Every structure is written in C-alpha cells, then in structure tokens.
Image (cartoon, rainbow, N blue to C red; front, side, top):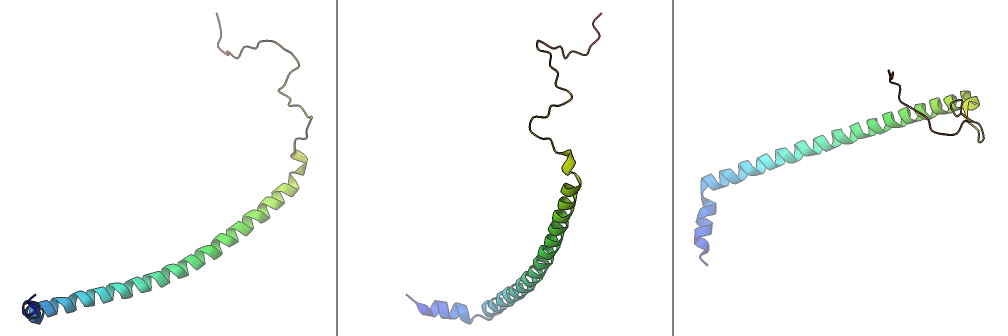
Length: 98
C-alpha cells in the first residue's frame, strides 16, 4: 500500500484546518454537555426535595382527614337506605307511558 498518498492528503493545509475546526466544535459540545448535566443534577435534587415535601404534606393531611372521619366508616352488616326488602322484578323506566 502506498502511504505517500495518505501522507500527502494529511499534509494538506485545508485538511489540517478542517480537523482542528471539528476538534474545536467537539470540545465545545463536550463542555456544554458537561455544564448541562451538572445543571440537570441540581434541578433533580431540587425536585426530589420538593416532591418529598409534598409527599409529607399529603400524608399529614390524609392522617388528619382519617382521624376526623372515623365515624363515617361502614361496618359489616349495615344496610344501605336504598336496599329494600321487597323481592321481584323492578322497572327502571322513568318515561311517562300514556
């Protein structure tokens, strides 16, 4: 294989300049991504703290609500006011039949 062609290609000033520009762009992208990752990590920590606070508030409110509404529980054996003792077919048609 003839390496003189490859050496001549890589010695070209335009090719060297293009390599430097691509390397510079890759470096800028890497720095930008690193900064962005750090910012997102900080936001994630903030949102976790916010979520934990909301979760604690919800649990506190739920416990308080449960303590106030203990008397509203339905116990086994109680009957609904809508259940009737009558057996047989029922009509649920509300239209006026004339």
